[in-house]
Length: 341
Ligand SMILES: [Mg+2]
Image 1 (cartoon, helix red, strand yellow):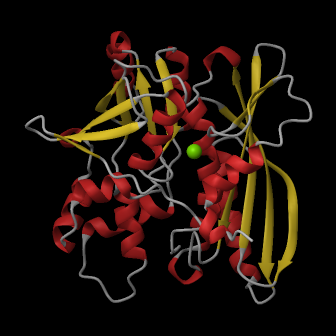
Image 2: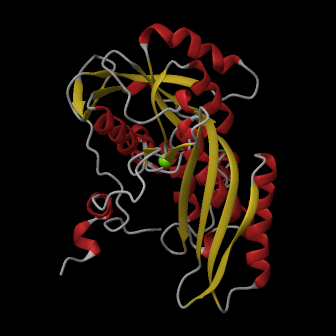
């Protein structure tokens, strides 16, 4: 008998992927990207993605606010649609609810989810509710659409491409650490910012669409497990090596001061902490000016060049200010090996 704790999430995905498809025609991508991609035969694709939030694995009921939980359940799926460059459409929601859960808590979850849905024009069109003998479990499945030729897979990065991330990295990891500390904190103006970045990530849907429309992006992924782990997915799918320039990693002032205060190495936490829900993408070298011009347009986050793609791999190195390189250790977040929150 092989137990999940010894086998791991990714080995399991590999094993179940071998069953193949009942109707392979029109399935452009099944397992291995942010969304499944289905050819609709009219020049467009349907995107399909799903995510689960499980109490005591992804969140603690006593360390989060219910509306934020609902927001996050939809936001993490929106982020997967954004990672392909698509427009979100419709969602179904499934809940497994412990009998002692306060109804008001579940209503607040939906309130946060619906606010996020209105903002992104997503219809919540159904789902399923059942009793849970254990933790609160919430699943959401989301569809999206986009032009077929604009889809940004993880697999297109080529040697010479420049690697970018949107926004600032690490805030969510710092926010999680703050959320799990129950003792009273020294009053810190940055605390609310970092907690908010953890509890209420803003999926980069508009940016993803703009990037896809440039046709200059060769590979894209959203940052759910951390830069180190997610960039390795791009390297693996694309068959390339990547180099991250240490000093180019965008860190917020709040994150820097948090790390200094608690004595944590900022770059390491930023690269290995998950749940940033920013976009990481590779761009052909000759198109970088055109892509960087996007960040100046209204409402789009900062775009930072954090490195470049070379042949070889799939591996990642980190380059310091003197040009010295060392391999980036990627632990690779695995749900069956990580402890959970
Ligand atoms: Mg993703």
